[in-house]
Length: 96
View 1 (cartoon, rainbow, N blue to C red):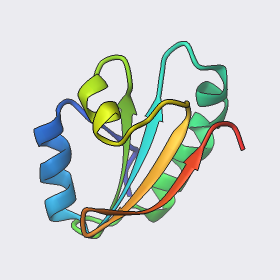
View 2 (cartoon, one colour; view 1 turned 45 degrees about the vertical axis):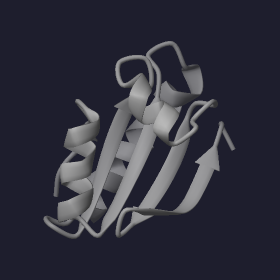
View 3 (cartoon, helix red, strand yellow; view 1 turned 45 degrees about the horizontal axis):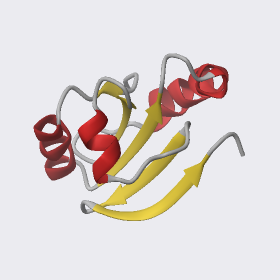
View 4 (cartoon, helix red, strand yellow; view 1 turned 60 degrees about the horizontal axis):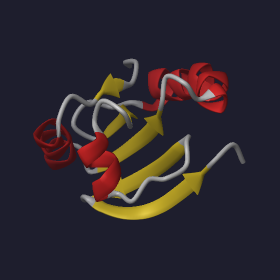
């Protein structure tokens, strides 16, 4: 299994979504304390549950990839979005 994949562009995300029926996106920021606190747990989940061409765990730095954050209307960090076949099926916002 693998660590989360850092998103580099909208097209990168599109490619990953098209090749993985289930995609989890962790929207984070370098200045976000709760993001740093949950990062080891998220990495652990990715290492245990990633599956080539089935399930991918990704990370999106909202400052570096602001267009992706805008596309998904992310305003709170961390935000976790689960996509199935490219459609949002769940969202967890903040440090809950």
